[in-house]
Structure formats: structure tokens, C-alpha cells
Length: 274
Image (cartoon, rainbow, N blue to C red):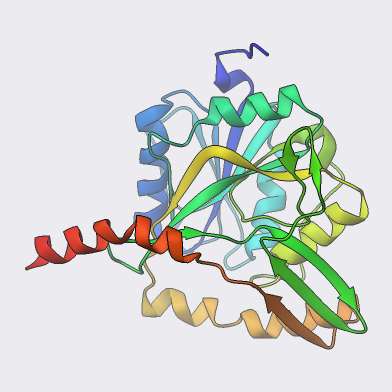
């Protein structure tokens, strides 16, 4: 199916940021290197709001300090006017293999509602990759146990595997997800699982793209980590909300073949450092 090649009319990118100005600037710069006019909506609840004064296609929402991931994502989603949007984090980078056209093609050629990108994961603050991070899978709550089966699917539809949840780097149809919201009682930690439990209950069709990638290049500072470590507090809320007593993750996030495939980048990084 032929898609509208002016993807700026088709899709917006939304990204929540907090106290990581260097990373959000790197993120937007990576988008602009490939898509100069693509609408980007940044939700920022930092003490000092990031600025993109010379970028007319990036909108920054200045939010109350530390209002949380869920609040910020909901505010950004309210601003989307394109048929599709891509949700990412501020430590994600777009490279030549992002293939937004391919993501749109899946949405327009099937009745899928959400299509995740595949993620190449890098060591904290390092240049080398750990390999592809596998997260997509099924999730069930049985007998008070929340089970996430990594890599498992619910079968195939339109030649694509169906999953219950995927990573937080995906394209979605606005029409299919307009009545879904992130629980604003969860500032960090389980907002993602809570969102996809809603999506599952509504029967949304969710898959992972075959050839579209995001690059996760995290950099954690002591200042940022003190906020990130609060996730356990919000996990308790999430468990109580859904009647969960314990959590079990079944399967590996890194397949050995992926580690081997990307090991060269680690060696190259080591020799450059030496």
C-alpha cells in the first residue's frame, strides 16, 4: 500500500523528559537529522524547562515540577493532531534504521493498533551495545501473580505476532488509543504495564515491527537516579490496583545470538578507549 510520503502530516513524536536536558536535546537532534519537519511534542516537568527556540516543529510543554511520566505523557497525547503518534523516551535515539515509513505501512496495511520498534540497547553511558532488548510478550494475572512471558505471543494476525505488551517505543493509531490514558497516580515504574493492561482489556492488536529500530542510549546521573529509585513505591500502588501479590518474569531479555551479533561494537569501543 502506498502511503503519504509527507510523514509530518501522518505522525507526531511524543517524548517525556525530566531533569535530563542533554538527553532530550540529543534525542530531538537525532530526529531532526532524519526528519526536519516532523512534529515533536516534548513534555517536560523539570525544574528548568528545556528550550528549542530555533526549531519551529518542536513543541515543549512546561509542566508542574515532578508531575510524573504518566501526567506528562497524557498532556502530550492531548496535543497530537496527526492520525498516528510515536511514543519514546528521552534517552532514545533515531538512526538510519528507524524506518518510520515502514511503521506507518504496517498500520495502514493491517488493522494493527500499536506497532513497537525493536530496541538496540546500550550500556549506561557507553558506546557499545548490549544487543537487542527483547521485551514484547504476554501478560496475565492469575491467582494474584502477574506473569510476563518475554517473547511469547498470542498467535499471528496479518502475518504479524500478537503481543499483550511491548517496549515504550511504538507507533499507535490515535483513533484506537484515544480512550486509553496513563494512570497519573503512577509517576514512574509501572505506568507502562498498567497502560497495556488497559489495551489488552479493550482487545487492541499489538505487534513488533520487523525492520524498524530505536537505539536506547541511557545516561544515569546521581541526581536523576534518586527520582528513578521511587519506582518501588508506585509498584505497590499498581499491585493493589490490580489485585497482584507477586510478579514473575519468564524468559530472557537478551538472546545469546543478539549478544554475539553486537559484540563487535563492544570490542571496538574498548580498543578506541585504549
